[in-house]
Image 1 (tube, rainbow, N blue to C red):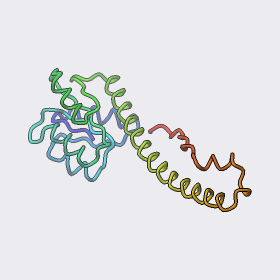
Image 2 (tube, helix red, strand yellow):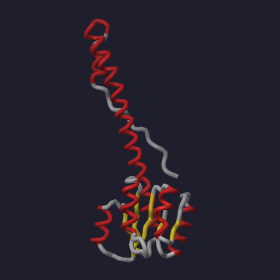
Image 3 (cartoon, helix red, strand yellow):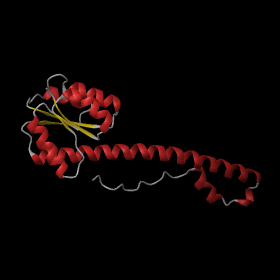
Length: 177
């Protein structure tokens, strides 16, 4: 989702990202951002900082409250380090100065989407590991209970594998489109 009060910038970035295979919604009116965000569920928002009606920082705060994994890149004509630091602390992943270079924007978008992919993968891994750990713990307890009642039935080296289960390995996820 791109929100900028300059339609030329919205059109340019929309065309660039669409050409690169991304599904994009571009808005020139910041008041529409919240409705489009709720219906479109973007992975990434590219926002202008200063806009009439609703500022980019308000959109950032609202987006991050709704989904903390959505990445936000800011575009602005102001070269203020304190502003950039503040926005990054509040959840923006990048801060680009207008006029933005194509290569810089493309790299920033790719980096932001890769960051989101890694966060989502990590969340899924934690859930998998948590569930896997519970299952391994139940098996370990059952085996240890059976071993206590019948020690000759289980070789000791096999039991050790169940007492201290290894963490599951990560599989590489396919790259984003």
